[in-house]
Length: 70
Image (cartoon, rainbow, N blue to C red; front, side, top):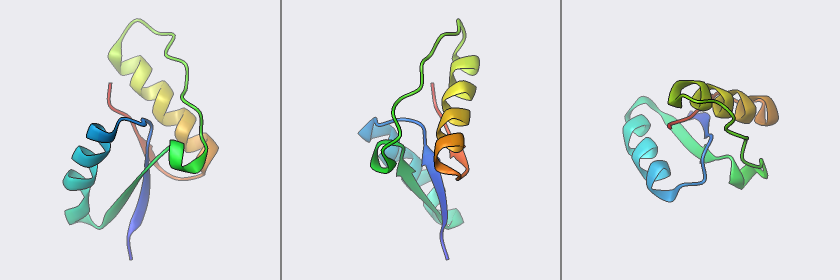
């Protein structure tokens, strides 16, 4: 049984990287776009704050755990 995790990005390269990284742990990575979730705004001045904002946005709109890379 795979665990679904939303990637708060529509970047195909990031999707591939995350799928390869998390597949051995039984995780299925899905893009936010495949769920109809629009991209979050990135209003902050740091990568960390923007990544947290994006992951929280995707989790809120999908009801699934989410990760982001910035």
